[in-house]
Amino acid sequence: MTDLEPNRRNVLGGIAAAGLAVPLLAACGSSGSADGNSNASGTTGTTGGGTGGSTGSSGGGGGAAPGGIPTSEIPVGGGKIFDNQQIVVTQPKAGDFKAFSAICTHQGCPVTQIQGGTIDCMCHGSQFSIKDGSVQGGPAPSPLPEKTVTVTGNTLTVS
Image (spheres, rainbow, N blue to C red):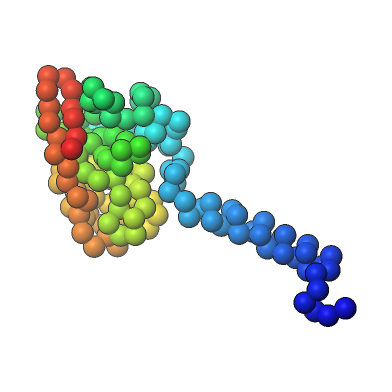
């Protein structure tokens, strides 16, 4: 028998190596949240105030519905991440709504929480201001791209 012929040891070794690759590749995916706040509705990290940690999702139908986002879903001094739309909407002060891309400018990871006045990417520690998306810490080279927020009554639309 030559070394190129499959034998039980080679086959089992290949299966074991493949078994290691699957969890490693899954860890690189972007469909979840590094801090465990993701849920089936596609939202993460709703937080308010400048002192509290992430309080999880407020539920809803997966983010910006065709009718828009109720202003009541965005806490003053915090914000909400809409995973499905890859946006983050903040309200730095009452009635002042901002929206940004939810994709970190460092290496393209999704941001995962809003805490203490910053939008945080847990992949490498980048932090962005809830006021203007500017870099507040970490390796991100540029601010989060800003989106346009339109307020109509008690509803927000982001474009």
